[in-house]
Image 1 (cartoon, rainbow, N blue to C red):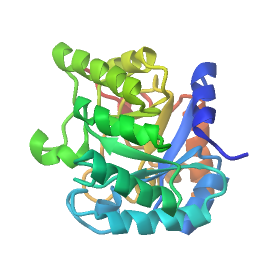
Image 2 (spheres, rainbow, N blue to C red):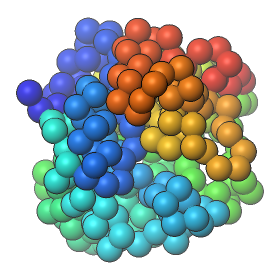
Image 3 (cartoon, rainbow, N blue to C red):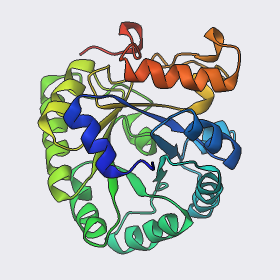
Length: 264
């Protein structure tokens, strides 16, 4: 049975953790979905892991549409979430047009990075039948504004603001919240504060779901390995076994462990 937004809501209500992985092509989409991963994210991380850029900023809409369509062809029942690239949702009109392109390519929901300024955009998308994931915390498209890839929400004022933004974006229509590189305690507070399913990456084990970049969880990370990454292939004998191990570890909440999380 295909995973839907309602499936993720049911997981949250039951307290069952769900798994998310990036994928950018049909072959891996099939392997990932057949392994039981609930959500496939076509991340603009492809700009770094596939294209070799030093950030996600150069990724274009045409590239995201292409990779989304590839993933949709290989998918076997996972929910497909696609990133909207840098400055493709700077206005409500642009967001509507570009989200439509991703949905036509096979996405089931789109992901946007930002805070309360996205409320009108999320409301407009939701009204028109486009499910939205709101990405808070370390938002890679803002890397130049942040001055690097840094943990967000470590002081109480910033933490309270992030909780407020999560609630506001949910009220605007966000179906899912994604938290990246925030202290585990803050992620737990946000997960409790909203009814929407919350996905974490570097956000502790209390979130409703976990996401990793496929290349990272297979141990083929180039450059510096992020704290929140675990190489699942190192403990298994094949890609398929590594994917299954990841799904199990997320479901049983043995991943992420203490060494993969951040503190305030």
